[in-house]
Length: 380
Image 1 (cartoon, rainbow, N blue to C red):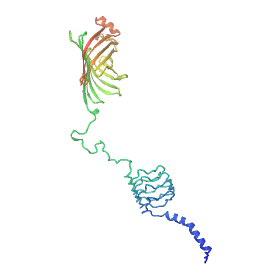
Image 2 (image 1 turned 180 degrees about the vertical axis):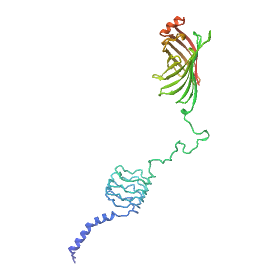
Image 3 (image 1 turned 180 degrees about the horizontal axis):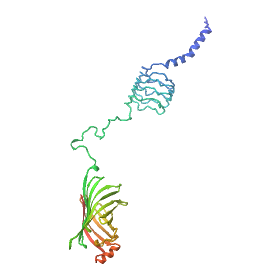
Image 4 (image 1 turned 90 degrees about the vertical axis):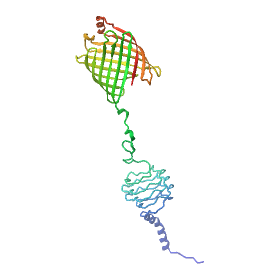
């Protein structure tokens, strides 16, 4: 048997080449063209891709099992070109949770990158992409984002015509009208008819209101005492409305300027306060409060109180300075016809206050009076 001896120079050269081969492979991969590279089953956990060209990289295959958790992209990737990168394949299960992209990626070009594939299950929770420019990326296959400017028309019609009825209008912006007769009844003991009504025209924000209240004597000279006002109505808050206008009082045959406030006080008490400035300088103040105590869907008990005061004496019209008169009544109503019509029966009471009591006694007039009343209230 022959034994061949190998010289030491040959062994040394072989060892040196083995040691340098990994370095040569690493250097060669930094300038590799991945244009036709299939990475569907590759493990990229330790790859350095700082100088790689991805411009023609085809990732359209099935990359659902690719693991990028240890991928180091912390180097300078400012010149990486992804313009022709095709990522239309199935990447639903790709895991990027541990991917380090903290390097300089400010100049990376993703303008032509196609990401229309299924990426619904990709995990990017740990990726740092704060320096990347995605200005021209095509992300048409991904959910979210802003809708285009012309996605919806300003009137929400989406180009569909309104038809023969025209464009709809909100109910609150339409001018409407209404009539409310709060009291139209007969007082048996005083032998007179009492009435109170108001009618209006306008919207929920602005209205013109005509209001009148008074009494009509049914015996002797059939005298009519009424206070009528024409005013502008406007909401002041959620529960309160303001009024301002002119008025005329037939009892003293004088006109006046009127201002008032009406609304709902706590515990659903309907409250109103109106002040009248007459042409002779007299000021009249009317205060009122009303509550509806509903027994069931039809029967309602309505107690009401009224108070009248004046700023100075006027003996010709039986008026004294201060509070002059207090009135109260209780009515039992039955609402019918969708609650638009409600007949009632009740009891009313009136009394003079302060110096007005002495003035009535001097003129042989009753200081107090009470009466059974019956009538109807309605609105339409």
